[in-house]
Length: 222
Image 1 (cartoon, one colour):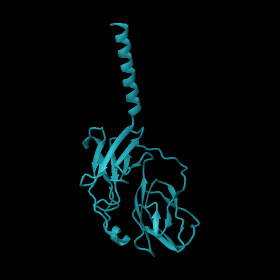
Image 2 (image 1 turned 90 degrees about the horizontal axis):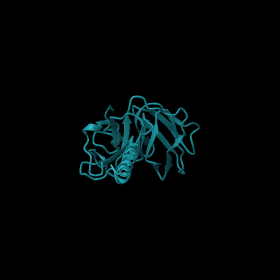
Image 3 (image 1 turned 120 degrees about the vertical axis):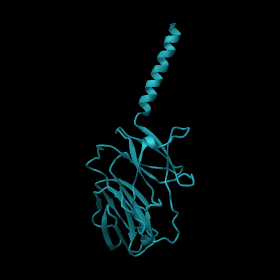
Image 4 (image 1 turned 180 degrees about the vertical axis):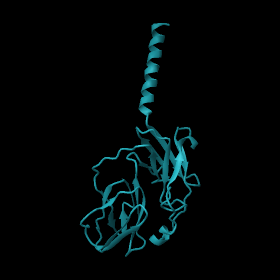
């Protein structure tokens, strides 16, 4: 073997090792609805044996602006606190009776004295007892590497965990807003870009949907 051939082989081997290590623990996903359209704000949660979540986590915030929750969807991890300031010049009455967290912040202005803690895994659907069209969602994850898809339906999940399957959720999914779908990676097809493809059946909400309309479709999570 010539020196040039040996050098070339060595360079290719180094490149292969580098690429293997660079992509270790990286998973690319592409989530679409039943019509094949990119699905924004879908949550993809790794399922692994023992995820490590930090003991001390920052307080997350869901504000209330122009009779809307802002953000309308929040991703947190189990045990995290959420503050619910009211930036409107009217009072709100925030509540939820989701299985993952049932709570009530009675009619108030400004900011409640204490944030609300969310110790249980699952989806929490928020409403306002005064303004019934105010609807919000909190996904309480069991894994710190959980991600949300962008406007193109894409998400890159980086994890050191031994992950063989994921949970998938979207607020407009047809089976109800609290249902968590578990998908094994080896059952998913991959596109030409190497992305795992996930399809979620959705039901488009009507503009006048109320909290009660949304919550009526809730089904038990896995």
